[in-house]
Figure 1 (cartoon, rainbow over the protein chains, first blue to last red):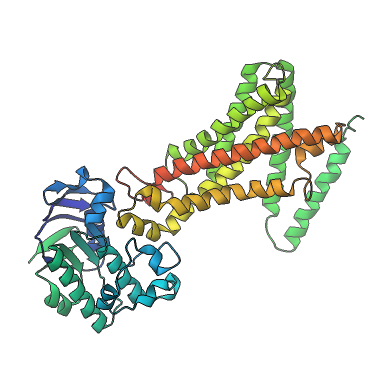
Figure 2: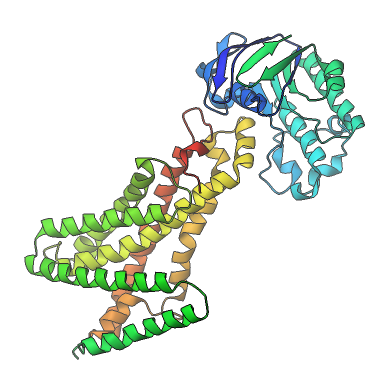
Length: 196
Length: 265
């Protein structure tokens, strides 16, 4: 579904990679290895060399807005631009969707400044999945979560991948978490990628 | 009524006041003494020079010289716009955006004022053309400098919020909307405030000058009203243009936010 050929930027790569529908790849490696840079390049948020194809269609032939809706990246710290949580959703999440991540409907009326980083990260994921992307790129999404909430997030993402036949790259520093969720793992070294 | 000429002695007394301020600042360890003296010296030299240039220009009375003077003023204003930005676009575009955004409204509106409003013959009469251009250009420069500074600093400060919108598939134009809006407000608020207090709190300089040199106050007021409207229009249009061009340059053809195009603070 997602093919990456000789993708490289100033701080990472070259990377070759293939992701199949429904597959979850866990990415790990020392900080500074360029994990975030790699994900930003796949989402076409930074200038880069090499090729990324989604279902055989090259990134550069697709408009950037359409590409990012299909190949969606959740940064380690998600961004918010309006005052209240609910204003950031083009389609309001249902109570069931919120509950799946351990959140209540009341959070949509709260101000961004008042919610915790863990809540922000879960809301960022919901906002992203609301666009129904075909590939999700998650940059340490559960780093600020307690173990129970992290499990809920793992189930939510796995459920989404199965339901939509989407693929995911999940950056995780926790070996136990990788063992729970990954179909495949990959270690990123500075300026090169080794596959096991 | 004739203007009373100032003697060297009068200017010397005024200079003594600045000297005194410098000494007071220095004695209190507040710094700024050096900057104050350098800026004052610059001001005196620049104004004396421009006085000489204007004397020559008025006697030559040729459109080419007036045009040259306008060009020099524009290029100097361009440097000033660049200097007022803590983070600016790298390369020539940082300078050219400011110059283009100033030149278009300032020259167009000055020309319009000369030909249509004041209707002076010939249109390039330096006694009218140079002061009009100077006042419009100076204010447009301030607005554009404020606007571009706010745009570039804001882009760096709200990077995460802008990129979050790009990542959700929003276009660059939409992701930068509130940034462009805020920058335009920053650029225009001083001008709007100036209009609001004109004549109540502050007596605008041009009107004051005309009254000092013997023009009846109502005549001077009419000129001042025209000038303030021209300034407001030119500053607003120039700032809109500069912010539009600057914001475009902050994103590339793939609608990525390119903060690497800005200098580091």
